[in-house]
Length: 274
Image (cartoon, rainbow, N blue to C red):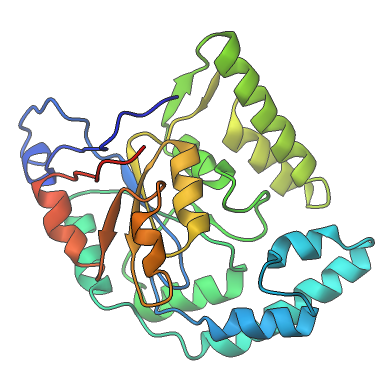
């Protein structure tokens, strides 16, 4: 479904107070993990590519899923998990993390996670820095297909009861393609994962609706997944990803997480993008 740019949401200070507003109400915020909730650990990706013997131009997960046998895939996956386990002990919370989470909780804004990390480092981060805050659902690497596919975001939207009807033959065709891609992408996963992916995409008559959500991340995968899902996107910028600030999939750029407190309280307004 086509979204009008720039993306806008009503000021939370007004919607929480019960005031009616012509702009849509924010329905929830989805966060990436590495580089978003915690400071970037870019050395991990260099180490992963070294152990997998692949260049920077090759996507790590796509490479692993392309290996010819399940045993080769699992061995490769375990090699990158080992790197993540070692690095998780060095996780550092992003500046402004605690203030933003307290604000979202006070405003009653739902929080979810969609990450390409596996579960253990995510649980470590949540228990270390965010033990008093609820994130649900938490979509990790076990969910396929991963970002930049929008499937994980649509699953979260659907879990929050945010759905829209399939609108006409053209929309139905696009949804059918999405479900097919997700089903085929999850064929090597567990039955529970496959069921989740299909449910996250669409039912016979409706599809997850992320138009009332914001995706906060630090990578092109985050921005593209958010844009394809219909969500607004926020880039947490750093020296390594500053080129994404002008990318067509980026609606808003912040330097620190707690900058979103003022943005959301006074009304989210994205930049003009194609």
